[in-house]
Amino acid sequence: MSLDIDTVLDRRHLRRKLSFWRIGTFIAVAIAVLVVLQSAGAFKGTGGHGDHIARVAVTGMITEDRKLLKLLADIEKDEKVKGLILTIDSPGGTTVGGEAIFEAVRRIADKKPVSASVGTLAASAGYMIATASDHIVARRSSIVGSIGVIFQYPQAKGLLDKIGVSIDEIKSSPLKAEPSPFHTPPPEAKAAIKELIDDSYNWFVDLVTDRRPLNRTQVLKLADGRIYSGDRSMKEKLIDAIGGEEVAKQWLVKEKGLSEDLKVLEWKPPRERRGFLSSVPFLNWLAGSTSNEDGLNVNDLPAILPKRLFLDGLLSVWHGN
Image (cartoon, rainbow, N blue to C red):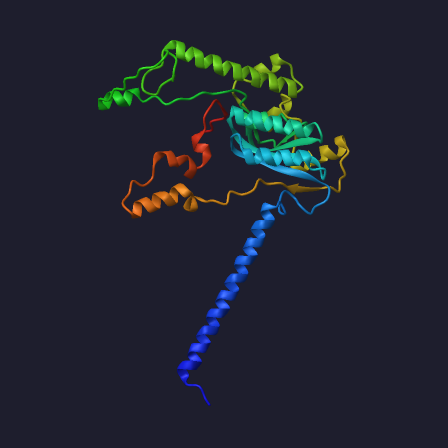
């Protein structure tokens, strides 16, 4: 008995639905398996590779990056990593961030050789990290140096005076919350901040003196905040050689006895899965906006915007114009 047209069409539509859900289920299961494998560390570092030289990029604004520090700790423990090349392209960042990464690199250097290859820029905390390596290479036109520390604060007193706003405060002692953006800081507040800067600056100078073939007097002469070309840095002994990553690798081979055949493999911190549009604060704001509630709270901003916009503490950073 022949089927009518409607029955045939209904069956075809049902088959298409079943095919769609089968494919969707397969994709969902595959994604779940990948997530489980990644959580178990199956894709961590350079899993599956043999002996090699690790390459780690230090770029952008330097902070106390926990993912990068964890990556460096993994490299320190991984017996397949026979050496490390740091590729640096950074204007600097927080002094604490530079110190933390410096120490992590030195722990690696206690177990395996480390060289650094400077790209466009290794200034301030970027140069601090470069000195943690045993050999620094830079291009002739690279920017190197800016040894120093800076403390900046906004001053809005003039603006407040113009619009007729005054801010009163009661505090436990004169130097609490100084310098303030709401009034000209007293001389003793500036003196206290200068003392703090000098402590960090002297520590930075001592670090460079310890890591480079220079005495403290020579470092102080170079540590006036200026930047140097790769060529000049070579003459001043701030770096060891002119070139790129290949030169950095050759030093590991010739001076540290690593095999020429070792591949240089990139190590990267795990990517942040949550993007701006999927962040919890953004979704909360979106939900609040659509339901006429309060919406975005200022306290949510650090979770939405890049962390580099919320740097705190002393900065060791080169300001390029």
